[in-house]
Length: 164
Image 1 (cartoon, rainbow, N blue to C red):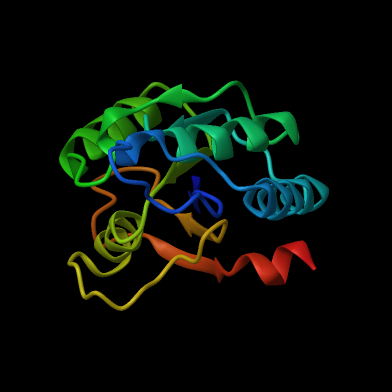
Image 2 (cartoon, helix red, strand yellow):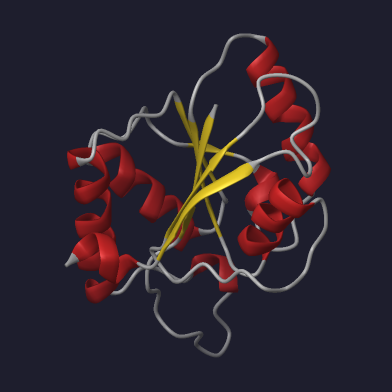
């Protein structure tokens, strides 16, 4: 089963008094993220679910992916917020897979997404993988058993590879 891991696009810088969760994509962020999503669609990427962090910049990125035709309207998944509960997502994924669900896209934040990819591939966090803003990782997850340490990393692409 394919898992697309997508980091949110370029967001505005933090402003005094503004909650981090309310930072929005910049004009450049929209443009680059849209180009990445359109390229993914042109490559035939299709998912059955798009899960997103509740943070605005991530949910905006997820909506752009939906609008490009990658999958259905995004669903907020609390585990994808910064510092979110990794095990909560693993449990969700195992239930999704066991019910016959297909490819999934996750939209969230660094370093969490890099850590999640590392756990899926190596079974542990190594602080080595970095997902650039609007970057995409593609993993192949096992059809049964735990995904932890069992995934195959197929892509780790910065946006310039997909958007140019």
